[in-house]
Length: 291
Length: 130
Image (cartoon, rainbow over all chains, first blue to last red; front, side, top):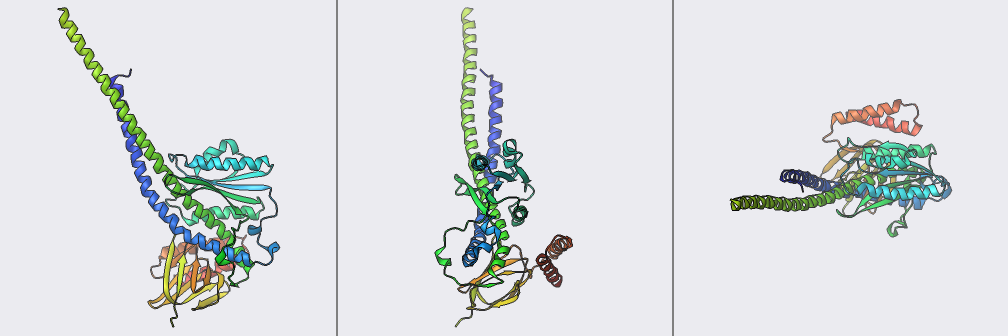
């Protein structure tokens, strides 16, 4: 059995760990509110963008001449996956969930005999993927320096993706991120961005007749690259809210576990203290009796 | 009869401005400036770098935009842009910064004519406000 001193040391070390996790939980909670807010504020932009693109693609008459970003290259050989994770750890299953989802997809692609290319955004994703898929990773991006998620970072990623598409380096592009549902639930998402999957027709947008200036195709070919960045930005916002949410609940759990541990250790400490006192008393008494 | 309609400007981070008493908006569309009054036909167009002017009951406001796309429908004007600056409290440093990066971009050899045209436009507009 551990000595009293050892127990004391352990209790104090668990207590200080608890202090750290508690502080991290508080910080995450504050950051979560901000991240959630900006995720909500960012929604109108991507919604409107989606709407306009939907209207435009409905209006396009000649589907064969549609921009490649919309219709695809006509092939399905090389897949590019953009895996978005966090730069920091200690956030529960946040990164693992994305990676798990992504790995399933990777396996499917490879089983079908297609080529796989990976771009990782965030250092944690790279760390987890480099062992198995190191050869497939063609680019690693990290925004450790940026304090908040901002559009220009997303735009950078978008530009890289588009540049590679223009060079015909891939046919299909999908992004992986965590969608923020609430603090406890984050759903790993897989979203195909090239070619663009136009969602089912919106009732309120199908009937409109727009005047286009310049022509539809030209607007579309200008707009689609922007949409890529917008989608990535949206994913980044969702991701950052999810990260904070996940960290918050992870740290909450850690704090609770540390509390339980302190309780257990304290009981053990008290018991062994009591045992030591009893032992001493017995020694004294039996010493006195023998006289 | 009122002559007013509503306008909303959104950038990726947030809804930048929302007004429902505007009488006219002038936007720097790709093929030239467009002034939009009430009951304009539904239109989608994209913007080149330039100045957006918003006329409303409460006065006139001007903004610099880097790029963007506008949609006008049912007397609702939506302007989506990645970068917008209010000309009232403009930051000279920020302008020069954008100017510099645009110039750098322009000096690259591998840009096409359209990009070049847009960059030229950008520099011109920036010069005029600075």
